[in-house]
Length: 320
Image 1 (cartoon, rainbow, N blue to C red):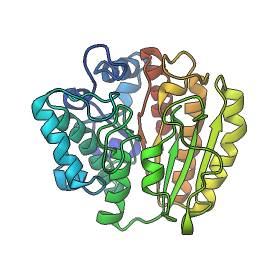
Image 2: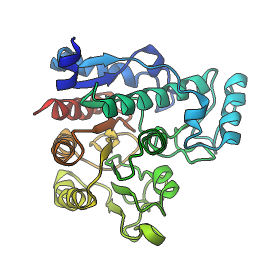
Image 3: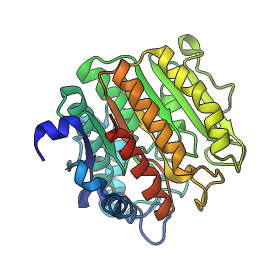
């Protein structure tokens, strides 16, 4: 595929190294998720229309754009031991977990740089969107928060201030929300299952940011069982919130665990929710951000749902 074709289409990050981020022994976030996505791309014919890229591990200094040095060193030691838990028990260490998590960050960082340089028009990283990791700790299957790193990278390397983070994963993106809760330049919009019923228990509607960032955060909790009808009712509110903020870059976390049938959650979307979110945000990015939109996969623990949700996002990114 030529560079011109890449500029007109999207870049997809895949490959064996990125696929290593997954936990062993029947863990719901297993290494099978990459192949589930790639197989769906092939079966729909979308694989022939995108540019596949690979990236290596991010340097530690880039990971530390967001994470505390002491925590990163803790992950390195756990990776060498290859056992134990990185949090209360949801996120186990395994041999090479540091390198695997660093590769997720490396792929997202490479995508951001390509989008900013114009060598990719839009990009999607399926094994990414690890939105529960905090600056100083792992949480909820997430070792390094690639979304947080992407936000900090945009600011440090490209002086981009106004960034919109939009999250349609079933779980609230607490690692991003609390890291930037007082940051008025980070627009945060998150539709998720009500935290009274689902991990991490956060994201109430009255959590709207603090200090100068009051009103710059939008949390939309939905009841268990909420389907496309609920999603399409609240989505215009999210879109208008992002539009008013006039972002320079849009980051979409599009977890597939909000589709009906996911074993860990209780929402009941179809892939049309993901298609519509990606399509309307792509249009917004074209009008406000010189087309710069990055999708990251997030959660999703059913292979068929991963295929349906993420190919819908890719297809929407390919649309003119």
